[in-house]
Amino acid sequence: MPNKNIYLIRHPEVYNPNKLCYGQSEMPLEENFTVQFDWIKERLNLGGHSTYHSSPLRRCSKLASYLSDDNFISDERLYDLDFGNWEMKEWNEIPLKEKNAWIVDFVNYKMKNGERFIDLYDRAIDFYEEIISENTANDIIVVTHSGVIRSIIAHVLEFPVEKVYNLQIDFSSVSKLIYRQESATNNVAFLNLTAEN
Image (cartoon, rainbow, N blue to C red; front, top):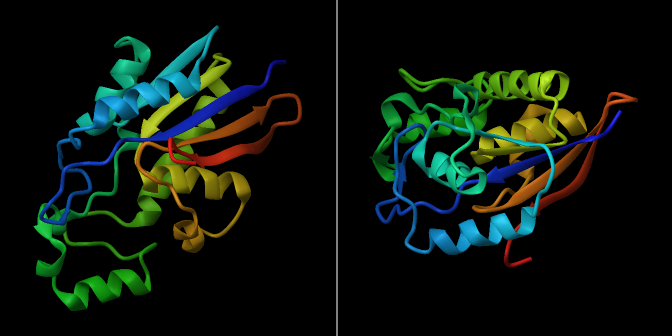
């Protein structure tokens, strides 16, 4: 049984001069995004049977479309965190009491009309377990957001959700997992590879 290579790719940096909280809101990519697109495609250099999956948000789907020649699957489980009433507000406009409550327990804190990080974690793991059990491709490419990537890696490494922000996941980074089907085990091949490192 062949191993499965799972590539977790974070979208390129967004244009956000006003420091908005944007979660599931659409945001344009920075001007140099095509350079990042090219670097990622070159780094992957895949042949054979591959499938591509993407968050529905355009900052991810544009990259997935480019990598896959517009042959990718959009999956709502790959969405960024829903910040509810915080969406598209400047971070300094969000009440300090609410931000502090989130910082103290970001895993379980729910913004009004938003979701908890544990909700994102659960849907990310549901997606991951599905692709390793049902996807027949040798190479599985996932274009998504840092929270989803951190969640999947935390799950694979079996460390607490509360520690996910100890993982650095940069814009335009590629992380690779290997799922060994014979032993049903996961290995981390590399984390947070960027054009700079």
